[in-house]
Length: 318
Image (cartoon, rainbow, N blue to C red; front, side, top):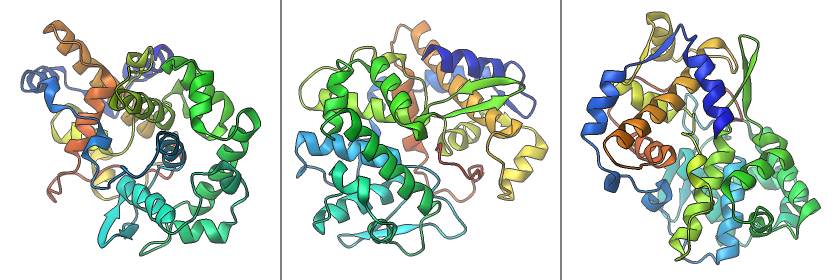
């Protein structure tokens, strides 16, 4: 998306705490092939086959509305069908568990009026999930807004966007305030749109998996700046941090949302992936940024305890 790339480039050009190592990008791209880059949901340990097409699209909206900030001193963990899940897979498991229990979590009418107690029961785990109240508020907000412009099904909003990724992204940001992911940096507004872009990406993949085509203009999407991508990119040497920032991250000291350091981490993440895309293109391969982003995210499943932890920022953006 043009304004995401333009505004994050403004940050990259002025970054003090985070830098991109271009030579590492070239070496990494030389080792990769696009065949090794599956969509993240294709790697899901949870089966969605019992969901209808309309239900699956509603599932994607419910998931990405509240898929953010799972970390803590003790990880929020969900038990589902005899297995334990945390992070984004934990949220997937919680939603599917609610469906199994007969809770109509995919119904916008239900979500628009859901009580805080019932919502907490749906997201129950070993501990209370971080930002529970914010997730409850956003869940109700998204459901109510969707009902105000449609029959409450996310599929209807996709049709209103004429199955165009750029148009759908604009609709999400305009209709749902919680998807408006931007920050201030040196007097300028910087756009990221992490959750909105990932929802559009997964929606496009849904149509492709069902034997159709991607959403139109799907390749305008950028990488999704979160916790895991910069963690992996730093491990690979693509991103480098100044000593003070690295020490904060290693010590798990919270980095405030919209601080210079946090914005620089996110902006350089987006441009590291964009530079990988450009490197592929120079080699005669068209690999979209969102596809590369998926691959890097899946690399983050590595449980190597010797890698630098991800940065800590309390936010509903990612």
